[in-house]
Image (spheres, rainbow, N blue to C red):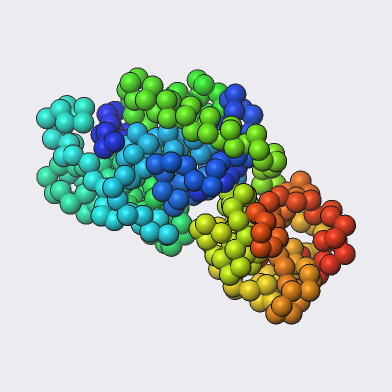
Length: 351
């Protein structure tokens, strides 16, 4: 629980996993047991986004955030999570009345008039990452770009937790989450208890192992240089690698090419049209020598519906996420591919 010093125990793939502390690689299965897809997506997007917005913080990975979420709320077990990340019914912890429940021996009197936790006498921790209302008032952020900072939305809660771990360093020192000392200090800032750090570390290690196993089967790719939205779109697209191509599919279990492009940019907060012939006009044209993470590459493969008939998403280092055709899985391909170069139409930067 952020800044509380105690914890309530109430028990999608992607980039940014970390092996041997500091070695980055792609690799998360299409699903992780016990983590709902929207929750896993929130962990991954927040991890990728943090370093882009807070240069003093490096090495954040989805296993770190999942480790906290696993201990704080068991990834909102027993709750419904919408595609946009809203958790219903709301997850609210025990009353912090100093009775010892959840390890709390110091009363936390109401700070929000019961607005977030429904209790106008004492505070209760709220949301997937179990923020105290008072902490949320100063550190709560809008993670999904809808204009509202809601601790009961998993994207808002996870993004706020990631930033809190980064900026709550008392002397504003750089934080490298790939370093054990920095990671432990950050976890202690989230909850000042050694047993809590040990418990979260156990989850982090388990999820890092899952990522490592998946990474061994996937190419090493991180989103390259680009805008915040472009990097987020690229990261989300990388999260879908290995899932099947599904004609007309817009997820979560399968996608066609334009469905993948649309949903990747939607996850980054930018709306795109549904089909390639409209998507090609939904941004700024760029040259192949100017590509940045998230840029869309359009091709005339002779498919129905006119030209362009195919779209991929550039992720950096000369590579693109490609949902090729029925019978094949989403994969990472080289942009410098003889076939695709021969049918190239345009490159577009959405936004």
